Amino acid sequence: MSQDIQKEIGIVKVSDEVVGTIAGLATVEVPGVAGMSGGIVDGFAKLLTGTQLTKGVKVEVGEKEAAIDLSIIVDYGVSIPEVAWKVQENVKRNVEQMTGLNVVEVNVYIQGVHMGKKEGKEENRRFEVK
Amino acid sequence: MDIVNRIGITLVVVALVLIGGLGILFSINLIDLDMITSFVVTPNSKIYVASFSLLLVLISILVTYTDYRLKEKGQGVVLDNPLGKVDISKQALQDFIKRIGQEESNIRITNPAIVLSKKGVVIKLETLVSSNRYIPEAISNLQTHIKDRLEGVVGIPNVSSVVVKVSQIGKAKEERIRRVE
Image (cartoon, rainbow over all chains, first blue to last red; front, side):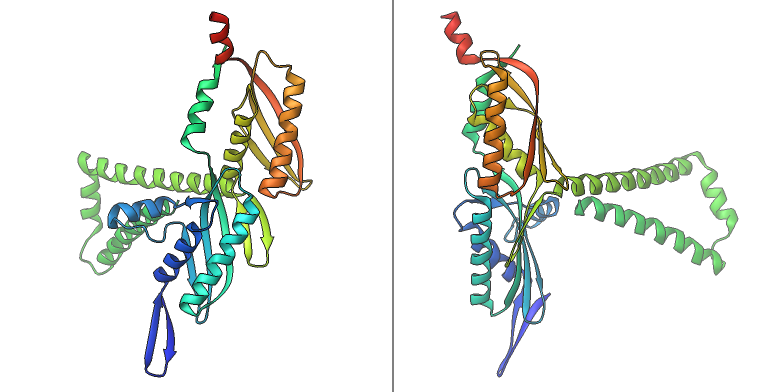
């Protein structure tokens, strides 16, 4: 699937993957986003192709509009609604600026909270069960 | 889930193509019933057919189970805003609650569960509490802390209750080291 933009001297095609990559990059640059969360298929794709540019991103592109679903992991301690709002705004702005598509919806799925390795180890050290 | 579903769908398609193909071959007289029955009669071919059928059954069960588990796991808290929805998965909420437990001294949260009801979000969890703490006070603090953080940081407007079960009593390692010294 790709988005065709009719111009006077030809057609400009923007593939779904390009939209997905723009969305992915716009997502991870928001402070508070620890990373994208891919499913089994993403992991399998990475195994086969060695690339994972659109991990955690699903894009539906219509003629002039696009809807984007993002699966992300956020850092512990940040305000989740605030981070999600910033992600939505940043993704919408970047995709619209770079592709000319009208982004009608950016759905954010918070799949996990990044706790950091240090805290996890601390937890194990603290207790001894009787 | 997709990969399991795809394997399942592929196997079902293979099975249907085999059955359909046999039907077509049978109908145009390229194969007769005796050939099929003579093939299935040999012990080896019976094992092949049984293995393939068993594989199909197992894949079907696996697909159904995985689908059910993922649907159950994914049903989290949904917050709407003009740009789209924000869906916070149960897994994320569980991670978050466990991390809150780390901030409370001498309490460890082991099994957080999130129940979405009409009245609001109910948090159920099991805890391990240090033996040097007054349990009602420690749990009360934990409940308040969890409710405040979920409402303030996660943005859930309606945490109706935090149900805590003290399942184990532990001893903080620092305390034990101090006593040995």
